[in-house]
Length: 404
Picture 1 (cartoon, rainbow, N blue to C red):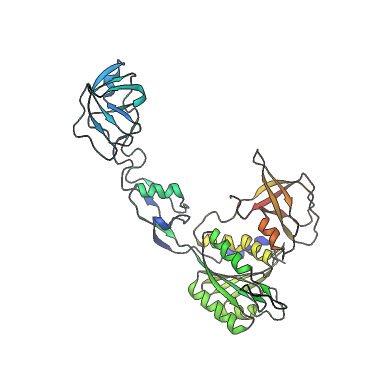
Picture 2 (cartoon, helix red, strand yellow):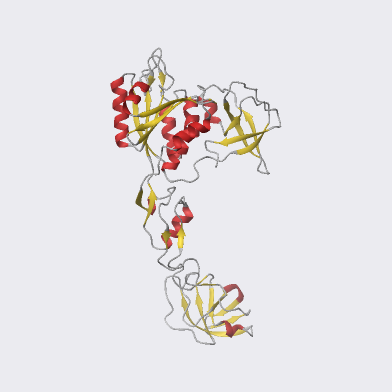
């Protein structure tokens, strides 16, 4: 067996970031910038008011309360038709351009407006710039808005839209094929025949890829013969940036995956010192990475989390490729394992009012027991030979729908 870190290093050393493409802002959420973004416009593009109120010359309010002549109204999306002179004021709505000659705004709550006589009583003195958003206060031409490696979220896309960009250069979202192998697999609701099982891995992995920000492609089921398996992998490598397969990595008597992949690419077949997910394969068909995951459903998911997901995120341009490891308090003891493996126990729990996590072990820890994995909030990392007592701290990796 080899350490998990050695397996990870082998995989990560052999995957590269995908090339850069230009995508519309509407399709850019979650993608990673490949190039810096530089502004070519002012934001705001003009001085405007942050409040409903009256645009004034600040010096006119020095002896407040004062009465000023109201010479017009400026609405958002419009401009004043005349400049403002000393002794005058203009009604102004939030976001409207400041009239020429005005240098401050008095919020409406500190005024008393007499529309019949076009007068406004200003109750307070204000300084120059009061409630005024200056042109370019947020962004100026030449500013670097975001650096390469930035993961684009809602705020980033809002800023890019505010400077008039409709597209941006990013690393491509990896297209990842998912293939199941095995004569025993059934992919329809018909009654099962003796020896058949339903294919859960493909649906699980396609969903995990989607949740990870990848573009999943269903490559179907390859039956246990060399021709079908070779056709599935060859076709997948031609249309995808990477392939995930499940099953056929444990060297059973009728497993043809190893024979086929060894003939198609440069593969390494590993036994990793972890449980679940001990068997794992990785290699390249041409330049397409192939991740051979175990057939047991929990093992397949754990392999994805620990090995495939970080590599795919690196291909997508992410600098942070792993889920965060947190510390949690175990509410119950965990059994001791002296088998040379790090165990990843499925646990449930969450943070208390202080933010400190508390966990309990789920029943059903077998690598075939998918329900416990589906209910898990985290994987608890139990080093070889370590006994966890109730109240002890343990490292965990939040998974599933838990916020990272």
